[in-house]
Image (cartoon, rainbow, N blue to C red):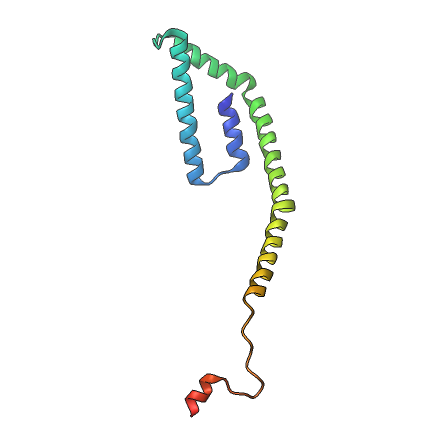
Length: 132
C-alpha cells in the first residue's frame, strides 16, 4: 500500500531525474529495511518457504483488491496538495519577494546615489585630456 502511495506521489509531483532516482533509492532501502525488520520480529530472521509465499500473496491481494483505490485516492490528495502549494507560492511568496526586491532597490539607491550626468555642452574629463 505504501508503494502505491509513493507512485501516486511521483505521478503528482513529477520530480526531476536526480530527485526521482534518489527517491527510488530511499523507497527501496525502506522496503528492504522494513521487510528485514518484519522477518526478524516474526520468526527471528529464518526464511522459510511460507514467508515469501505469504508476502507475495499479500502483495498480490493488496494490489488487486485495494491497490487502485489507494493509488487514486493518494494521487488526488497529492495533486490537490501541489495545487495548494502553487497557490500559496503565487499569492503569498511571490508578492513578498517582489516587495522585498523593491524595498532593497530603494535602500540601495538611497545609500549609493547614481552618478551625475555631464552638463549640457560641457565636455567631461576624458575629452579634455584627449584634446588638450
